[in-house]
Image (tube, chains in turn cyan, orange):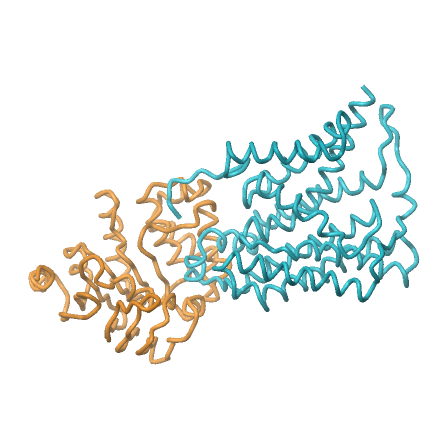
Length: 294
Length: 232
């Protein structure tokens, strides 16, 4: 029983990390359809923001709390700038977008190496997040619990923005019918930039959370980017609920398989499972029924 | 009010409109008629800014708006109901309307939504249904209501009765005619249904292969002339 609970918690915590890093992509890739290979570097920027803030502030707790909004602004601004400089010119050319953002990704990685050096760096976690709590005989790492809670908070916040605010309605409208949105009085270019800002900002906050579970380096984001895309695709492009379910299912699956096999075999089995799933359901877990063609 | 002067426009290298001139009078209705492929929708898309003309100008109250983006034209009082009962399918009926009211610089707000729903009461009952699940007629009513929420001075309607069941067509016709009669709003109507168009219009234009081949005063008296022009 303890083993099952232990593996379940590991799976849920893997799922929480996956969810957090995929959340920004549900906006930029899921909603806008932009394959942004530099998304991982926004995660990296968020992680390095924590590192930079921790030096002058000293107190790990204060710097972590401060790093969340600052990382959101830093990564969000980088995303908005990327959208304004390059991506907005390539909306009708997805393959070119992929290549261009991949190039930007390599440049940003090199920039990080030039500034912070090639070796990974470590941030100090606040005391509260270095221990564990015992529930039903299972030790739950507080850092993992923090990430789980933070991921769920971000999902709830993003869902609330998309569903209840004028900005959310504008984002959804532009995604569904760009021309109609424009002739309905919506400045679609501004909405694109704001969407990119929020999506990239969420990646920055994910980067802050990642500093709690390991060292960070120039390729921190790249290591997660493929998994993040998988979560969005399997969940159903643009579907927040699908991304949440997929992240936790993949996390649990990986945890169970890693326990009964090895890390590599688990990864292979999960990827094969995803390929098989997408053959059966190419549109992903969730789609929306509609009678109209547009 | 709206003047489309000597406009040449199209898609990529294909020119669809050849030096077309159309004027919509103040508080009046102008109808554009023509067969499929004549360039009627292209004319409205050009007037609204979705297509940039390679030649000619679009004037609104004398101001040259040829290079303005569509959302800037909406801010100046233009509204457009495109062909095909278009909506934001994953937004509810209420969200489709609030979306426009929220962003409207002309201050429509909740009052404008209520006025639009008064014109199409069926939408009130469907407020929480996703637009993609509405019938074609309901979606067209929503499309017109959404355009009216911005409190426009000029309404561009692209075949509002196309592909819709007769009872709803009658309702849409009545609404368009009453809007035009109310004053303060002029309409540029693209329509294949000649009877409706001529009942509504003070002025008509017949478009053939991207050129105006016939134009004149509207009204039911001109219906025969228009039918003859269209049968050529």
